[in-house]
Image (tube, rainbow, N blue to C red; front, side):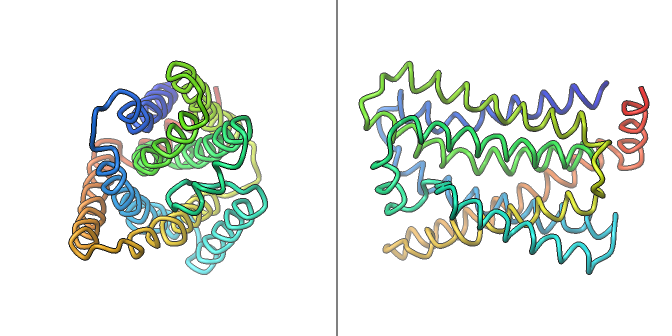
Length: 267
């Protein structure tokens, strides 16, 4: 039962943090572009740190290196196909924002909600293995959601939607993250998928988003000064998430987390 509290608390707090960018866009006076410039490289560093410093080592520990590598690749390809087939934009590139602007608000909300649900599945899968890994995964996803929410809020406001309605729609959409996490964690024990596979696929998800979607934005930065600042922010995010991972694992021992989850499942 304690793990359920940690899961729901982490996902709820993570969802609220992800909305900060959008809230600043609505109520902030200035500096939104600056926030976007800093949030994007931070998201990339957080995702890469979570993947390489936590998810992949744990996937290898729970299985075999060759199997983990294969499912990391499978996870990467799956999310590439999802993004291409569903036009699942993350709104980090100007050309993607332009394309999304031509879509109606309903499609934007649907895409956002589906994206949040997938994020929840990743968080739930991580919690299945160890609440400490789940916390790290939640931190990385929350960091990634801040620049995306900036884009989503901006798109909806540009289409004439009232500020209060934009906020309400995004809060409801964020609940999909909680739902996805709860479904995977609640029924995951009955899925014929190993912990190693779940972690590897999630790592592939993180690597794909960071490498194909976010890092190119940094490379496209025309000002050398800002490119250097963004590089520093990316490295800083790696150090922060790495420290969070170490702290989480020290606070929630791996063996204890496994035994608690087994107890919850049996009950």
